[in-house]
Length: 78
Image 1 (cartoon, rainbow, N blue to C red):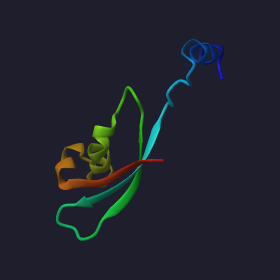
Image 2 (cartoon, rainbow, N blue to C red):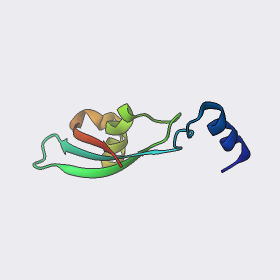
Image 3 (cartoon, one colour):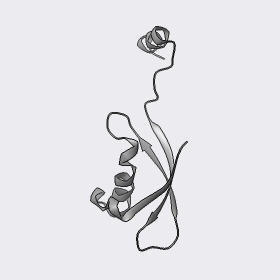
């Protein structure tokens, strides 16, 4: 931990937020039977929980705009 990190913790009495958040996502793809699971990492300042469908679409098709073809069924922190 850096000196600044220790100072932040001492000032507010809490640990600083993690640099990344991981989620286990259960989702369905329109037109395909069954469900899929994937791990997605969100980096605060660059992406948010609401970006998960676009991240998954980009992985599957190469186009984040295909997010409408996905339905997120479950989103759990890991």
